[in-house]
Every structure is written in structure tokens, then in C-alpha cells.
Image (cartoon, rainbow, N blue to C red; front, side):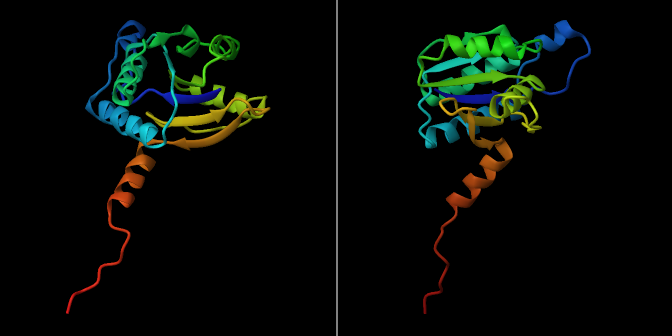
Length: 175
């Protein structure tokens, strides 16, 4: 299986009240991050056949927007393992449920997402990996330990798109 582990996109400022924070949705910038990262996955021909999200609104919105942009026609599943209080053991159990799939996009929150990523690729959690909002990591789960193939955030994706849209040929003057 290939695991695409994604941190939810920008949902604005944290709210002190947990009930209100759980209902916090994406802001305009977050929706743009979703479209950008989905286009990136599409350009990389990511073979996503399952999308799983944290139950919180901002993660569900991220998963749904990315799925829609990719043309994903299945239902977005939810799992408490990707929620704010999800444990690594619950995350591993969730991965086992989808082990027969070719590629899974899992959308969650910090600090869980980067801690899960660190534990997956080191086996002990010793890796401190920063995942900005909207970041996606591609992990090859067939390797032992699983191998991080790449990690991209919306800033990097914007820079890549900007550089490839410019002509690669030097400008010459006509005389």
C-alpha cells in the first residue's frame, strides 16, 4: 500500500472552546490549499482508491475537497484514529483495515500526523518532521520500515507550479 498522509488545510485561528474548535471549517486560503495539493496529486498520478479523515470538520472538508478535485467517486470514510486524541496503535489498526488497498489518503491533525509519520519511518518515533497545514507525505508501506518517498507543502507546490509555468527556453531577441 502507498499511504498519503495529509495534514488538514488552513482553518484559521484555534478556538479555546473545544466544542467550537471541533466545528471550525476551512478558510478561503485552506480551500485554495486543498485545490493546489489535489492538482499536485493528480499531476503525480496518485492512485488513491480510499480516503479516510478525522471526524473534525476541517479535516473532513480537506478530504472532501481534495477527493472532489481528484475525481474520487467513493465515500470519504472517517476514523477517530486520525482525530486529535488518536493513538499510534489506533492509527496502525486503521491502516490494517485498509491494507488491501493500493493507495490511501489519510487526513488528520498536528501533532498526531507528524508523530505518526515519524514512528512509521523510524519504528520508534525519533524523527521530528514538520508538516505545515495542507502538507502531504507519500509513504511506501511495503518497505520495512515504511519509507518516506516525499513530503510537500503548499508553499513548495506553489513554487513548483510557478517555475514550470514559465518557459524553460531562454528569451532571445529577434533582429
